Length: 307
Image (cartoon, rainbow, N blue to C red; front, side):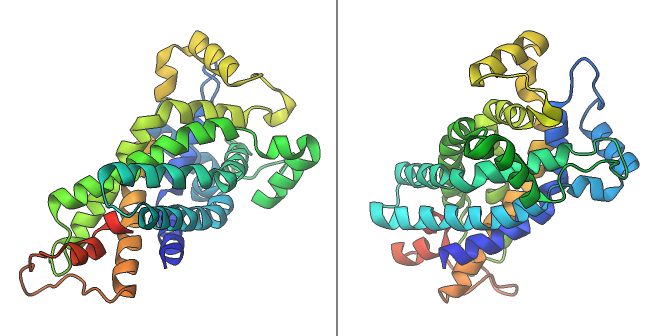
């Protein structure tokens, strides 16, 4: 059930957040000497004007297919790891989240590579004159044909460095917030509380590893058009800082945080509610006040800390 709930939550999150992700990637990898976009709003505006609304949804096929399974893996592994660890503590929440983050990199890295390449394709064009990739699967097939398995897994190390602590922070923050604000079944404000806790968890986890994401995006976009700029992670960091200063590690952060809150609010709330109703836990009431939950067993069922 953890896996099914993760699937549904993942699909909902992709639909809400993909336009913000497109803006984030464009800002992260644009040429600093000849920038196309002045900031987040200008990037949104330019994409819609030059490429139509569909431009914001370029590359959505990859995360729609991949993130559905990624979230299934993340919530499934996290839930099973928590059951294996036995005790619902903040440290165990972090460890279970970190384990889930590391394992899902196998799917996440190729998926984000295809997404990034698709998002960069036809930049500034309403109708791309020459499409190198027809879709996400075609993109991965092209990369595999030219660069082999290593090319398909470009950015794997940075993805691991980003995802492992990131998901630890993600589940730890959600656990702390749901315990602090109280998300018991029967609470008429349970859904807004779940949305708030999920949204803030997303914001916190992105802030914790965002500089790594910038480097990952640059490495995965490197080679578009056949020109390679970076030979390694260290080379990418060195060249990026030398040309743009430390501010390079905040490129695209605004659109990322704008995306992080609604996407993770929807994802976590959906997963939690699916699990609650699947387990027969009564949902929020509209006409009566919340009934305090006193038993440890029932509280574990109600909160995402026991997913």
